[in-house]
Length: 501
Ligand code: ZN
Ligand code: MG
Ligand code: ZN
Image (cartoon, rainbow, N blue to C red; front, side):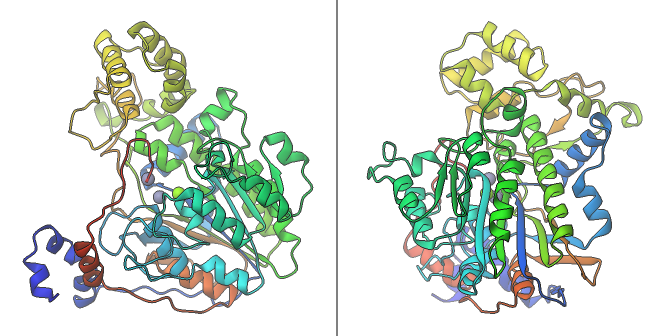
């Protein structure tokens, strides 16, 4: 198809402004270089983490916890910059296209793992690192088979094919897999009834399912799966007694194992549910997952200090929801109150909804908000929540693109008094990802520059390659070629309720 035909093509033509124009108009390309190699590489991905999330967590840490974020200290003193996140055919990426850009060095269409939309497989960076003798680890708070970790190790046209991805993990043979997703490993839950736990054990893995088993295990290769689906939020682990390991505990188990391999290692750590909390517009779930990430960051920087031949790369894959603390009151003097009000929030909406069941009454809803969110709902607000849970009538209707009942749970308690907040004054743009640039930061010895500047997410691939001395090029696809494939075979990403992207 000719370009001019595409330009006539309505919606598809509208997308054509991504790469070609940027290149044609001479968009500046910043390609910073490390100037040295490292033995180990740790990539810490904050999924769906925006600068607004950073600002809220920074304020909360200072005001309520009396400390400064490890991330703030790192940003103040070590190389950092911004990452453009657009995918091959959309200014708004999702996690697999973002993972592909970082792990494969090329832009792809949203939805597949280390693969182009025409089926051309790409080699993900951790696969190349494994070939070069590095041990490999994946640690996440999502299902361990979710897009961000999976896109660093395997190729699959469908990021949602997590049962299959679990089998691909077995074949790939990383040394450490830690996260959630029992439903993709457990014979009783898998559609094909295969017992992946038995298969991993057969292949020499220690298989652990609880925080205690994780702490006790002395297996050198480890598969840890701690929840049916994603690992519950930190706010629920910390305040509601949900029994799962924290991200920091998982990383603490992974590091010595990986460090014991002679040829060094690559590790992806993912704070994967910042994204989910933001989809829901749940500021407390976001906050505590960011704080849990920060404790993990502290552990990782300490590891780098003790193992100076390690490069730590911290990056977000895109922003989600974008819940910003907005100004309130005269001279905005009331703004920070919204941060303090988060202290009374002791559970996620996910946890609250599980407790409320499928047909709560308004009194139960009010009590749940009072006890777990520190907010007194009006009768009308409580009724709205009841209808969202029971009748699946979501609010606000068609205004915000949140497609989950939990979004209604969030919006039911939106701020009513802009001048004097009695609820956290954190406003969301939507329940979706956004297009804004996100954080990139480095920590390690001998980094010779202090400003990474604005780079493309594909440049993460080059930085990783330079760090380990691994160079290769994956095939590039143009936006026009991708759009032709999509037009011939129209299939969007699946967006069923409760499936996170
Ligand atoms: Zn993501
Ligand atoms: Mg993710
Ligand atoms: Zn997402």
